[in-house]
Amino acid sequence: MKKLGLLLLCLSSLSFAAEYDPVKGEMLSLSCTSCHGTEGKSEAITPYIAGMGKANMYQILLDFKSGKRTETMMQKHVKGFTDEELEQIAYYFSSVKR
Image (cartoon, rainbow, N blue to C red; front, side, top):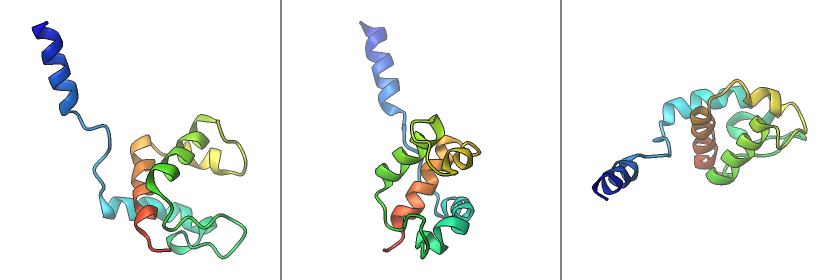
């Protein structure tokens, strides 16, 4: 029982979400600007992603990476990023004002 309690204590201290680094998030987001526009404010046919909810955007990026979503070239593009980097990108675009 003590081992279980210790295990639960250790697991509860872990943070599963990456801490947001604004500089890293902005730098990683630069790869998105050619299609989604500066700060994600697309003026073309691609989606406007500025101000999109962080959790929603992160899940969409993970879905592209896993192959759950296959439309467009996003599936190939996100494969070059770690999950933590995708989370930084989602944080960044969620912080940009629409």
